[in-house]
Length: 345
Ligand code: KG4
Ligand code: ZN
Image (cartoon, rainbow, N blue to C red; front, side):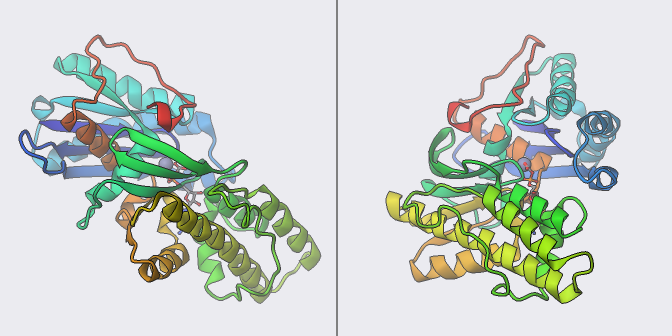
């Protein structure tokens, strides 16, 4: 069975095709994928402009689909199921992917399947050369979400803890903006931090000792703002790098500490990191070190699959279908869910 997947929840248009083994328990295999990032378009505004995002998804989605089919050396007739990100995300952006996917499925006489965006992130490490095994603790760190979850199988997600305010990606992005870095700030802040001293600035570590795997990042942004103001109009490059390094160190420390707490609480020995912030090199280094000491295996998606993409959506759909868990629709109707709790997916 072949599944075509569409991702359009925010500022990336992703399309991908996976082959789902008919028999046995082999994992779905990625045949081809194509991605267009809108980052350059939104950069002028310092963040994602929803209306522009939707219009750009419309422009990109069909050419990307043609690229994927060409790369896989297949045609539309070879597709058995069309999957799409049903939520959460920007309503207008979701509607583009969902509308195209469901129309295509109807035209082909094939079923369509809505996928939860975070389930896509969560299962994206199964696309790597060293895929995890269930059960595991998942640290989901994206621009909009920061959650620790116990994952026993596809569709079995128990939230152990989450952020009570900003997401980790948001903390990166907002701090980066205060430092005058372009959108999305996470990778830019990480780059600037390379030349900085992480101990140069004393910043708050909210909820570090709460004893629960929960997070809070809003206070950090306020503290960064206070430091930026203190440095005045012309901070030196070194001061900016030091503040970036100190900020990154706090975010990473919180993520590592809480991940260890979740591992301890569950007694599990496997950690899966997913979502855009999972691309952060310091986070990977610190998690690897901390987990090695505790005989915990850590899995990450390939770097290119950390941020939004179509492959993770096609993969999540494929893994659901293998377990007969996909709510397939054949009537051409659809709805998107801009807000959607993963535990209820
Ligand atoms: O998962 P994702 O692509 O989109 C959402 O579903 O939100 O995550 C995007 C987030 C942004 O906040 C971005 O700044 C952050 O991931 N990010 C990083 C890095 N690469 C992406 N944050 C820190 N370090 C990075 N290397
Ligand atoms: Zn995402």
